[in-house]
Amino acid sequence: MKVELAAAFMQEHDTLLRNLYQFYMYEFSRFMDWRVTGGGRFEETDLDGCWDKNGRQVFFIKDCCQF
Image (tube, rainbow, N blue to C red; front, side, top):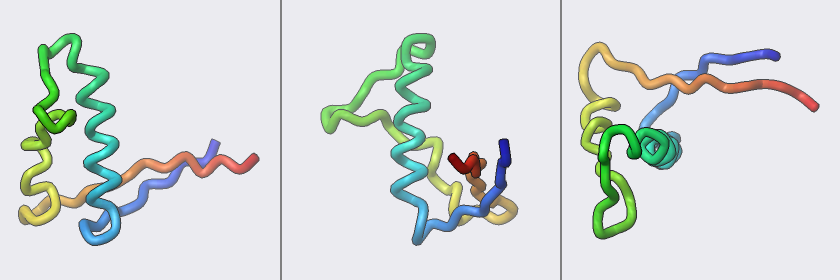
């Protein structure tokens, strides 16, 4: 298996990061008692500042497997 660490950028990846975070929140909601909002999504306050705070960079770990 080939794995790649790829830098993520807000203009290209914000929606993808927020959607992946929803799956993360869902998986842990049974342990953490997290609830969805009226809009059907979990609150994403933990992502505030992930794109623009100094010293932070978002990365995705990609499975580059070829079939």
